[in-house]
Length: 305
Ligand code: MN
Ligand code: MN
Image (cartoon, rainbow, N blue to C red):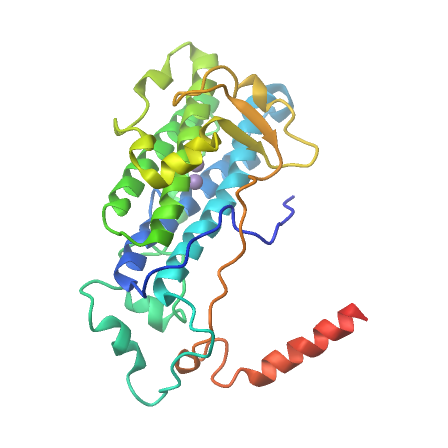
């Protein structure tokens, strides 16, 4: 079961401008092989399939609990893509030039953008990679062997980090880099947690390999910010009553310094959604949305009594 909190894991700054080039690059972190849809679906599938859940205790709980956090990562990557595709809010319906070429105003200036962002979506994130290929279940590895699955997850987190570092080098947008800084740190926790789980099972010191690639998160100011809040030491228990044995694995020293701690509930960094203005020319949410807004207002009044 999942409950839902109507927040983003962090607050994103306002993007500087509409930047569909960066949005296309960030799509890799949504629907690419090493994107957040992959981390979520891998851990979710493994936790669903795992045999002897009760006997495996903390090993099962770790995979199940991290799966829940990854859902929030899909959300924050999507929010960053939306920020890049829409730019700073204008506070009114943008652009009702419906019979002209309103999209060319956005795309003329850039070399690489994803046409699907404007055709299939109304300037919004899609479950595809940076080349527009859809996310696929072939990215999921769920062998049923605990050590093999954990080893895969360790690899997945580090490959995801490599891709994120490269995307960081492709965009200077503050919203994209804030998202990346946060995910460098959270991915670091997950890689370290899977390393600790493997160490306990096999005695092999997986954490000696970290970080991969060998560059610290503190080099990046947007990640340093979250390390200063000790996010790199925290594993969030994303369940009101379950997953009580996470500290059997997430204990001792954190690889980037400090003591590992399991924290109850979601991160205290949570922020509001980015409110996207309507775009009349894209018919999103409608060409003339007023009627829909009025309908919604009536329902608001009804539900408030
Ligand atoms: Mn993630
Ligand atoms: Mn992760």
